[in-house]
Each structure stands twice: as C-alpha cells, then as structure tokens.
Image (cartoon, rainbow, N blue to C red):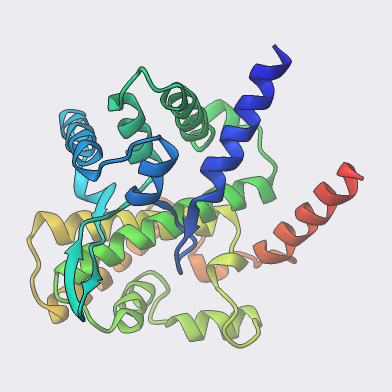
Length: 280
C-alpha cells in the first residue's frame, strides 16, 4: 500500500512538472511532453490516441478546438533545412481524454487516468459547496473562471478579426460600467499602475464580468462576427445589456460595489506563506 501511495505521489509530481502556465494564467500541457511521460515512443501512435480523444470530446458536444490547440513548431533536420513538427497545447480535460484512450497495458496510463480525473473534478464545485465558501474563497474561485473565460473569449475574438485586445475589452467594460474603461475602473478603485482590476473585485462583481465575458463569446460565435468593429460593438452591447438587467432587477451597479481590502495576489501570497509555515 505504501509503495502504491508513493507511486501515485511520484506520478502526480511528474504530470505537474510538465504543466505550463500561459500569460493569462491558464494551465496547459504539450502533447509531445505528455507522450514521453505516457511511455509512447512513436508520435504516429500517440497522434492516433489524440484523434480518438478529440472524437470523444466531440461526442460529448464539447468543441475539441478549445481543448486541443494546434501548436506546431519548425525544427531543423540538417543542412539548415527545417520541417514542421506537429504538436498540441492541451487542457487538463484533453489530457484526461487522452489518458482514457491510451494503451491500458501501460501502467503509467492507469495512473494518468486517475490523476487527470481527480484533478479535473477538483476544479468543479457544486452549488452547495460554493455557498459554504468564504467571500475570499468565492473571489478566488470566480477569478479563476474569469481568467479561463477571458482566454477563451480572446481566442474567439481573434477569429472575429480583433487585433487590439485592450480596446476590445474596454468596450465591454464601457458597456457594463457606464462608460468606464479598465483604466477608469483602476483609478476609481485606487489601484497601482498595471494592477489587475479583476484581482481587486468582490465575488459579485466578478460574476457580473464573467457573465459579460461568456455572453460576448457566445454572441460572437452565434452571429459569426468577422470584423473588429462589429466585435467591439458586440462586446459593448452585451456589457450594456447586463448593466440594464442588473438595474431592472434592483441590483447594485458594478461601479458601486465595494473594492476588497486585499487583492487576490496578496491573498495568494498569504496562503502560500501559511502553507510553507505549516509544512515546517
């Protein structure tokens, strides 16, 4: 039993060691690195597993392109010549599907199935569990969702023709915050230069922004928006519509919600410090 626990812990460390974090704080894995950990020697066979995983994703009515992002690279093959090397950036869910479709005779595969299943579940939360969280815990949870939501929105906006993303996001804020841009919101909150406004919002304000983010993405896809001008207009309209809805329901306007005393960056540092001290 002790050996099994040790093996699971080592496996967890292995999968965590090849995890990457992008500029938006979104975690991902490279398929080529995952292939080696899962003991596959030939890309052809592993690529076949990926294709099966993509089909499983589609059968669950989930867009596979959101979880299996093509990330090909040019590599040298000698004499200065180069060729394209196929690769993917994978979400945790994509890794889970790959593990489910990999060779079950490989011991590491069974451990991978358990690891990604458990970790994927950890990122989910029931309504009852959410209601029992403290306000700071709710903020951390909602901030993680907005981070992922913005990443997905950016991908969709890019396909819609958006190039100036700061401008695009400001149109959304203008709609939701009665004309305020991200800089205006930061100044009103008394934040330092370049300090993230989303890290300085309470859970209620984060939820309003998450709704803006998700509904804008769906509208861009649904209406097949193809120009930056129309994408900006769409983002403003969605933000403004959400604002009107909050008002009609008698809710508090986003700009009137109080700013938490501590940013999420500060809370995360404190939690990390406590974790280190408890391990001593």
